[in-house]
Length: 67
Image (cartoon, rainbow, N blue to C red; front, side):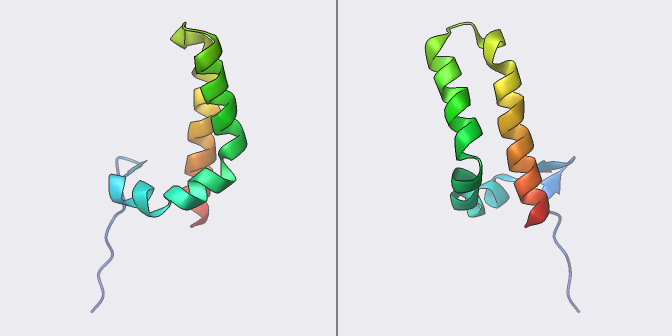
């Protein structure tokens, strides 16, 4: 009798899932993450980097859907 454990809470991955996938996220989402960090470094206004932050989130969620 196997049971499944939901790895998300309201569609958001749990911290254990993110930690387990950290190496894959770091590799696959490197480009968008670097662009986001560069944006944050270059512009102190957080609103300017919201689009790049969304791209990072989309990359991570897409990657997690494949795992």
